[in-house]
Length: 284
Image (cartoon, rainbow, N blue to C red; front, side, top):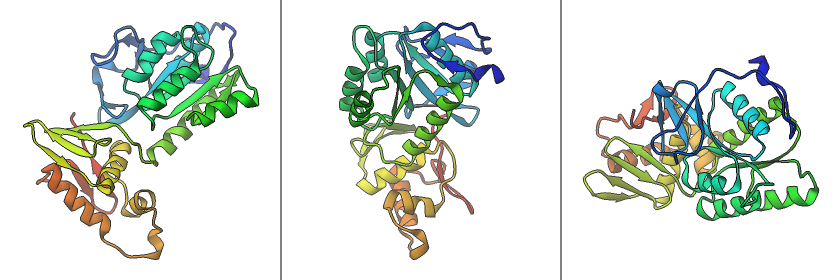
């Protein structure tokens, strides 16, 4: 992995390539390059993650017009174990940003056809909770402030090292998994949870409404990618309560109601992991 850690700038570089395969998943626009480590084991999930032999791999979208920088970013992310979608101009980038499923967008500002600010504004109108990191050589304070005020989660000025980029990607993904997201869907055996509409849609055509708290609770657990979530963590991040200062069974009662609405009689969708908390399993 040592060849992954280099400085990325606008200048073309000659660097070793990680061993990757390319292709396009069935549900992504065909002209978006897709770089994946083990495509035959990967299955795309509606939350922007790839399920790969039980592990949840975040999908990162990259919009960058400089071919050398774009390839360097793709190589670095792939080396770090991420799934990557890439676009090389503003037109393809806008389509990728609005149509593809991904956990995080890395966005250049200076692009042909549509600049990064246009893409960011359109994305925040359509998908307000989508995490974004701006990558740009424009390091002026005005540009940084504009990007952050328009909804970017971070702003990285070129040139930057791969170590810094990966650290910032990891930090934004951690933060985004801890905050409620307005939209998004989760596909489970027998149906789909729509978090924006706060409803469950079943394959037989029936529906069930979720309360705001039920939707937030389910979304938070889904966002953890199979990791068991302790009750204390749910109280802290979903209810905003300090678990050290109270004793309550509200989490357990909400889980009971969610299981009823999910028709999860055998508790295979919303599982209890003894001593660790709750987790979900989606379609494999």
